[in-house]
Image: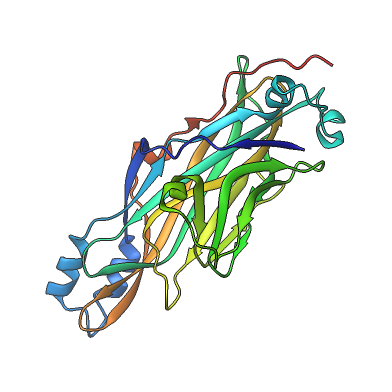
Length: 263
């Protein structure tokens, strides 16, 4: 079984995006009794943001080769046509004052490119982690891959005492998180608030195994959406979308340098 420790969490940001209501949502808000002109103006001045961290990516075939390990059957039977990449994504939700995120979506639309141009066959997510989080889970940042190439982290008992010195070696997932998109080029994690936990701060170590055409470079366009509650004496739910901004809409390269595997 292939195992290695994830790189230390990075504070490097790929981009920040402001989430805002669409024109149709603003029109509906203007008709709410509790949302007068002043309250609407105040809300439209709020800056609710999501920050996307710098992705980490490596070629799994190269990793197996470096560690002189036999390739799993899942890879070997497809390695003439495909590469398998390990990708770690992260994001942060930053609500403004008197706002709180109650739902958010963070995902990525995968594509691939060779020197000859864009490939018609898109990469797909072979596996995702976490896939569902209904209670707080703590994991060692030690990733492993079983023979079917499913990715996992080392689970820790949530009641276990954690030494402060080891905090950077941990990943904590808080409810609720739901993943979708396995075997598809579009993948995402949905975050839902609970009575105990809101949606804010860093969401890191969102892991993918990506299958892509051999010797291609994988790229991604990030998928962002959210719903916030705004306090005007009571909480009003307001759906938000990403602002039409080039920093969000462009594709970002995810691939590491391709290294050939010798059979």
